[in-house]
Amino acid sequence: MKNFKSHFQFSKQERSGIFYLLLLIVTLQIGYYFFNTYTSSRVENFTLNTKEQAKVDSLKSKAFLAKEKIPYVFNPNYITDYKGYTLGMSVEEIDRLHLFRKKNGFVNSAEEFQQVTKVSDSLLKLLEPYFKFPKWKKKTSRQNTYKDTKIFPIKDLNDCTEEELQAINGIGEVLSKRIVKFRNALGGFLIDKQLLDVYGLKPEVAERLLKQYKVMKVPEVKKININTATASELSKLLYIQKTVAFEVVNYRNLNNSIVSFDELANIKNFPFEKIDKIKLYLKLK
Image (cartoon, rainbow, N blue to C red):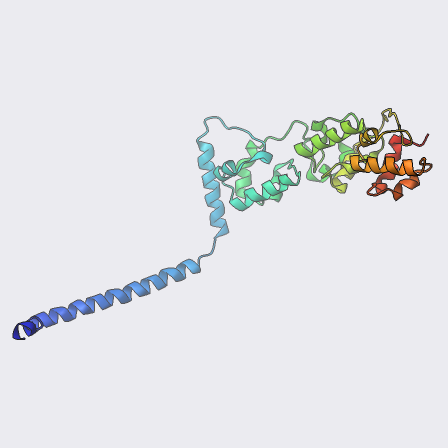
């Protein structure tokens, strides 16, 4: 028992050392607690200084362009995520551009680029000398961009090329290809209103297009006799699906013939709202 107690007997100096050691440990713990609390509050109270961020973006873009021995030019409509980042654009600015392009939008000037992406004036000033827009882009004010009739003379809608279509604000590469493909499938536009049937073409954009281009030379179309044509022949008409074509033939057989285009409203799923355009390709006798 005496040997056991001897392990817990300390001299006065040893007891003082143990006391100061414990005091040091407690002091360090308290200091660590207050340090964490202080740093956390600083992080929570952090706010972005937009002016300073703009300077950082500008410096980052300058550093990237300085690496190029010869200044290069590029079309800002096709900036990738990586290229936008290296040019000093933020993720939000790049995303705004990509969203605009997905909607078939196409910026035609540095001012439009800033309006879409909302980049800072300092960054735009740095990048603008390297912007290169297509050759068809006219050097006009932004106000005249929407007044196409004052820029271009009216031309035939059936002769315009994809590049000419892309000169219209709101029509990009994808949409211009779609318009030409639809026109070829029709064998040419017969009336201006057929332009509204192009998938993805907004009415306001079509209106701008029709200020420059109209159907001037109507192509010759061999009309299909709705009372003698087969379902396969009817389905070749772009406005009539194959299932609807069979419905037309069945209706015709049950009623001996179709004497009026108004009868087509009785046929299941027939796109009667487009009958004015469909009649251009059909005949009753």
